[in-house]
Structure formats: C-alpha cells, structure tokens
Amino acid sequence: MDVIIIGSGAGGGASAWALAQQGIKVLLLEAGPVYDPYQDYKLSQDDWELRMFPDKQQHKLKYSFSALQPLEEKYQSLRSWNHIHGLFNTSTIRKAYKYHHVQGVGGSTLHFTGEAHRLHPQAFKMQSQYGVAADWPLSFAELQSYYEQAEKLIGVSGDSEDNSRPRSSDFPLQAHKPGYASRKILSSSEKTGLKWVANSLAVLSSPYDNRPSCNYCNNCNRGCPRKDKGSVDVTFINKALQSGYCQLQSNSTVQRIISGKNDRVQGVEYIDAQGEIHLATADIIIVACGAVETSRLLLLSAADNNQGLANESGLVGKNFMETLAWVSSGIHPENIGSHRGLPSDIISWTYNAPDSIPGVIGGCRFSTTAAESNLIGPVNYAKRVVKGWGLQHKQAMRDSFGHVLSIGAIGESLPDSRSFISLDNDKTDRFNRPIAKINSYLAESEVKRLLFMADKCREILTASGVENIFEEYGTYDYFNSTHVFGTARMGSDPQTSVVNSYGQSHRWKNLFIVDASIFPSSGGGESPSLTIEALAIRTAKYIGENFT
Image (tube, rainbow, N blue to C red; front, side):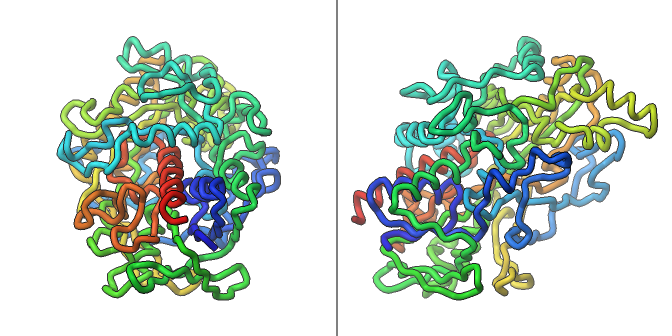
C-alpha cells in the first residue's frame, strides 16, 4: 500500500480522494462503522424528534475532563437558563457537557449543519498582526484554489456576490433563499448594523452530481437521508472508492503508529471488527482523527523519546482551542414557520475579522439556530417553550409552535496554556488504552468575547420583533464543543510547531496530519470542514509530487 490514512472525516476523506485521483493506492482505516443514509437516518418515523444523530453505542468516543474553572458572579448574564427549568448549571463550577464527535465513515460531517466556510484572510496572521495565537505558515491566497476544488466536489451553494471572502470563481450552486423566519432577521439589519448574507452550505440548492436538491426538512444534524447534504461519505469517499485506488476498512481502530529508522514511520497496528490485531505498512502515514484523538494517538505512539510521536517540540496536545458559542431563543409574535427550512440559511460576518469586536482580539459570526437548538418539533416546544399542563398547555402549544426565533454566535478561541489534551491514565477505552483527557480554561478575553456575542444576540432578537426571550445557553458555564483545533500546530519553526505547512512532521518525513489539530488559530466562528478539506487536498498534491 502506498498510503495509510487513519480517520475518514473531512481531512481523511478529502486526502483519500485527492490521492486516488493521482493513481496512489490508499488504505483508509476508520474506527467507526459505515452509516447507510437510507437506513440509519429515520426522519420519516413518528418519533423523529426523539432521535438525535444515531451514534452507534459501541463506537461512542470515550474521553474525560479535568476539573473546570469556577464561575464568577459578575458574569451571571452568561449563565445558561430556561424560563421553565431555571439555570441549567446550578453549581458554581463550569460543567463538562460534551465533545460532539462522530466515529464513523464521514466523521463529524455526518451530523454537521453543512456550513462550508473559507477562513477570513486575516485569521492566517494572528500573531504578526494582533499578537495572539500563531501565524499560519501559508496564506489565504495559497489555499484559494484548493477551497475551490473542495467546493466543486461537494456542491457548495452560496452567494457569489458576497465579498466577505475573496473568490476567483462563482460558487458551484446558487445560494438557498432565506426562509420566512430568517427574513425577519434580515429586516432588522438597519437597527443592529449587521450585514447578513446567504450562508455558504454543502447542501444542494438544485440537483448535482446524481444527488437531489434539499427538501428543507431542517434536520441536517440528525443525518441526511437523501444525500443532498455534502457529508464526506457521499462526496469524497464515494468518489475515492469509485476510482479503484482506495480501500476502506471500517470498524478498525488504530492502536499506535510504529516508528522506524531514519526518521520514518513504518506502519500502524490496528484491531479489526473481529478483535484481531493487524500490522499494516505503507510508504506514507496520514493521521486525520480530529484534534482530540489525533493528539491522543500521537501520545500513545511513543517514539525513542517516550514523549509521543512527532512531539519533539513538546507541543502535541497543547494549544487546544474549543468552540466558543452562545444561543438566545425567543418567541416572535407571528408564526414565522421556524420549524422548517435550513438550520443556518443566513449568516453575518460583520464582526468576523480579528479586530472587529471592540476591546478584544478575535472575531465571531452570527446565524440562525432554531434547528441546532433542537426547537423544530412539538416535543421540545412542550418541554422548553410552553409552560403548564392540560387544555391551557394544549392551546399555548397551538399559539406558539413555529414562533421561535433563535440566534447563535460562534467566536474565536485563542490558545491558552491551561487548555490542552493529555492522556487519562486512570480511564481506558474498550481496548484498555488510556483515553484522552480534555483540559479546558476560558481566559478573560474569551469571556469578554462571549459577553459581546450574548448581548448582540439579544439585540438581534429584539430588533427582529421578539419581546420575550425564553432560553439562553452558552459555553461560559458548560464545555460544549463541536469544533476543536490546534493540538498539533503547523508552523515553519520545528521548535514552536509539530508539522509544516503541508501537515508533514518536522522530523518524521513520511508522517502527515490533515485535520483541525494543525490549525494555528481557530478563526472567528467559521465552520472548519472546508478548510480541513482544502488543506488535505493540498497535502495530497504535495505527496504525489514528492513521494511517488
């Protein structure tokens, strides 16, 4: 085998496709199962609302948390609450909720909203321009053609008139039209000063590449049963398998990467679905397990220094950046049909630039979030929106269903020495290997950014006609992350980074990493999957030109 890829999410899937296109033989190892959209995503069932993404129990990722920080009284406005249940976290300590990660062919794109974003160009120079995080060892311009390749393969829908990101060609598909609920937000722009644009989405606005257009069921996060959402399994991996150059092996958990002589890795040791141990060798090893599991695997694959593979700088697991988020939800006086449409059909990049929020470095974005808040069905209205019981409750349900307007924000997460991934030597996975421990700390700058995000979400709702906010939650009092970054940072200096601009280990010349662990900065709220895919395609081209 020419290349072994560990992990089949955005980075693993995109690199498998890009390598296969060059006639390079790939073995793609995935710890989780294959998901069949037609069988596993049961949105046609009566109990659809009670089903979240169908994680298969055996393959739920195990991880632990260190003790999190105390909560401060002065930030009481950032506590998560609901008008029926009160505070969600009644303690005085930040609680660990969840790292949202899917083990399966397609990775976390199986349950993502479909957002397909390019990073803000200034996000590539956070250290030299703003004195925080680190600079990327490549520029936005160097990544632009690879962004375009990824967008074309997936079938990204977007507004080509949107000038928030440089483009040299139009989006493959026209933008989705905003739903009625989103139009209420659009009408508030003059009051709030926010500019809204159609969100760029890996969701088909018209039939494309033998896949149907979206039916606007608003359930992207539960898995798309029609294949109109461009998750990695139905796009990159499907095409890689069709090429004949990619072999996929699911339910195969890599235990360690085996290092060899002359600063090269030899192969991997993995356990298959039957529990049998195998050794697979290849000329190139690519790691694409996500920022938590990639660092864990490297730390478990101790080389001659016994500090972990590719950890000569001591930075594997360090510079961990999490999801900084806030959501406010209220009742609009009109029935705006917010239970249907797309989860995030419009977005505002007004405060996305690193210096756009007054008094703090690091930007954010705003978008609609009713679906991501799980407020698109009657069960959650009954539990979280409408008080009471009996006939009164029934009438209130009729009066309120479809009225929820929800606004969310995701912001920059800056590296901090107190946020990192380590091994938990007291807890193990089903193969008796130490699991990853998440160590998280929100510095004052992060909390100030959250305050801005929360205040602006409330302002947007009020300007859109909402009179009463009934629920708010954020990551001040909970660790709750979908996007995580930075535990194997890329850079030009081997002393201050783990890999170079191609994701190549500074020491182990045939070892590459192609996931968000290599990000030097998180960006101001952009969804990372498109950037991961663009980087992976670029790395695959480099491998093809230099190792074959």
